Image (cartoon, rainbow over all chains, first blue to last red; front, side, top):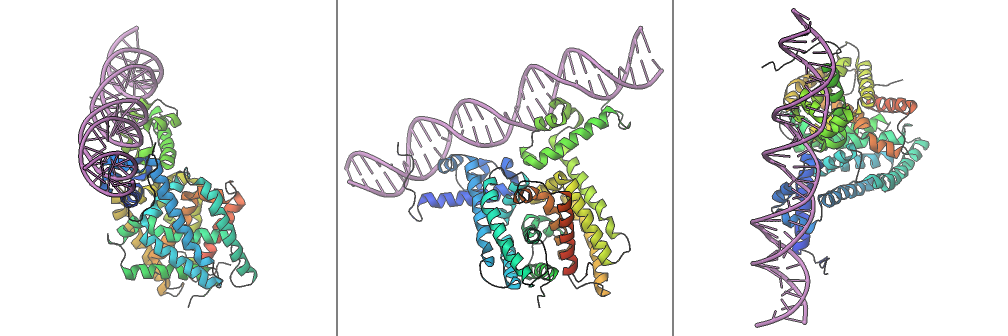
Amino acid sequence: MSSEPIPFRKFSKRSQNQKAILKAAEKVFAEAGYAGATTQLIADVAGLPKANVHYYFKTKEEIYRRVVYNIFDIWMEAASAFETELGPKEALSRYIDMKMDLARSHPYGSKVWAAEIIHGAPIIQDYLEGRLMEWTKDRSKHIERWIANGEMDPIDPAHLLYMIWSTTQHYADFGHQIETLNGGKPFSDAQWKAAKLSVKTIILKGVGLSID
Amino acid sequence: MSSEPIPFRKFSKRSQNQKAILKAAEKVFAEAGYAGATTQLIADVAGLPKANVHYYFKTKEEIYRRVVYNIFDIWMEAASAFETELGPKEALSRYIDMKMDLARSHPYGSKVWAAEIIHGAPIIQDYLEGRLMEWTKDRSKHIERWIANGEMDPIDPAHLLYMIWSTTQHYADFGHQIETLNGGKPFSDAQWKAAKLSVKTIILKGVGLSID
DNA sequence: ACAATACTTGACCATATAGTCAAAAAATAT
DNA sequence: ATATTTTTTGACTATATGGTCAAGTATTGT
């Protein structure tokens, strides 16, 4: 009848192993898809026997949920660029920078998120309807205010956000294609810097904000 | 020893059924992923018994190959906007229009393509290294010429192409998310028109081409 | 009419995999 | 030391699924 073991002791075996499993799962889900990801492979990548994985997580779906939620939280946090009361140029510029940095640092997460949406968001639907919609509406208001103030061109905020999301996430989700077209080599630091600058330059100028 | 039956008689049962299977498969692969797609479900959607599907296609992978190749060919064809000797404004504008139209008309294909790349292009890798790279290099030359002629801003052509690809395909691949943020309703004709205009406006202006 | 070829389909099989379980080992508390 | 709880792990099971097959039916050619 014990069921839930003591949940939190920092650095306990429990949280260590859970972290290892989730990290392995993120990679495996990204590379093989939900159905193609086997708990056996997740266990192998995490360096544990399969039964141990099921000791910490009841089902594969539970692992997947945790991975997807985690990504969503990271995305949301990155949106803090909009919180500040900067002008549009600085706010959008920082947001794009952050999203590009996340594309580089969390490519697996981005891929899992993309696949989840492609398949109709069976797990994250409630987040889309709740937190994401709220967030989007709020940021759209910021953008509309900038437009009303004549600080940038009149662009439908939704389409501007979609452009920022798609363009930045493309460097993660389609990283394999980009790498192939780059001669099979991953981007260097300099190439990432150039990518960020290109994206910012086109989008900012595209909505009437010189970047200089 | 007959093996290959007479292959082509327009409207033969053979080609009709193959077409139905491929259409069903595109939808099922898009919605469930490669591993999650069952031949049973493909058969059901196509309205045939499963054994019949295997009569026309030896393996699931063969069906998948055909679906992916088909999408690739459609993408490539859409690139004809670049063939013409128009200026950058007209050429890019037409290309974006075509890609947006394809996002609307072939969302399943776009999703299958996206998932294939996300998973490391296990099937289409040779196309990426061959036809896509060739195509990309060629179009990049066009863009570089425009830049050299002072017809547009100096932007790395690769990043401009990535932006066009990602932005347009986003309306297919992330269509579910967009629909959710649109109150659960798919885009109307007017909304698609507005989307196209927004994308074109930002990108063209962003590279120094007024749209007027 | 007859033969040959193309298509259909239910039943079947081998395999892969998510999840279980019980027994042992390790860690922790008293 | 002893008891209790937490963790580990190999072996096992039920189920789902890709693919086969053989016996049939329809279609086509002569």
